[in-house]
Image (spheres, one colour):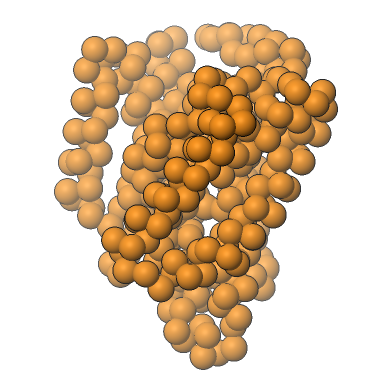
Amino acid sequence: MSVILSIFVDGIAYGMILFMISVGLSITMGLMRIINLAHGGFALLGGAAVHVLSTRIGISFWAASLAAVVLIVLVAVLLERLLYRHIYGFNELGQVLATIGIVFLMIATVNFFLGSTILPLGTPQSLTTAVDLGFKTLPLHRMVVISSGVMVLAALWLLMEKTRFGIYLRAAVDNKVAAAALGINTPRIYLAAFAIGAGLAAVGGILGAELLPIEAYYPLRYMVLFLIVVSVGGLGSIPGSFAAALGLGILDTAGRYLLPGVGTIFFFLAITALLAFRPHGLMGRAQ
């Protein structure tokens, strides 16, 4: 029983990290119809910024994290205005090649200035404090990750369901031509959605560094994992991304606990079978 509960808790924490990083990718792919393989690079840059600010400059972890997320949002706005607005018009192969190029630029930048080894983020000692759940002892950091994922989900729900921006965004996802004809400024919606997605990726990269360590090749190492979450959840679906991230987190964790030798094979077989029956994902729609 304790093993099952351990799989459940560890899987949820893992899934929350996948959700925070992947949900922005799902929105941008669903809204903008762009294959942005550079999305994981924002998680890398967020973690790298925290590393520099906390371990080299001496700023506290939480202040460094806040500054890093703001910095990544600004970088995303700049990239969207200078590069991505041109990439939107490319065909699928062109988008893949262009965003892969951006990934390599990010990797080369981090590799040049910080090296290719794992970058510690200066996580405060208090987050390593053990919390006894009765069936398992967890570091406080793991509980913070789960709580953060729930808060991100609630914030996105409020943003999408209770604000004018959410109405415009959903309209653009459903039919961007009709939304533009009704006077919705779709380029500005694109920019805001892209910046929010990049900021969430940075949050996920920072909080998830314990499970997915920050190093220069982070975007390439975990790119497939982020794309799987988007594919299984369905393009543009926030609830779908959440369900997919939690399900995949628990499934992957269960494979590592119960089938340590073949867990990864079992994981990808399950994904293949699921997408064979639901090619548009759990909550996706045919384009």
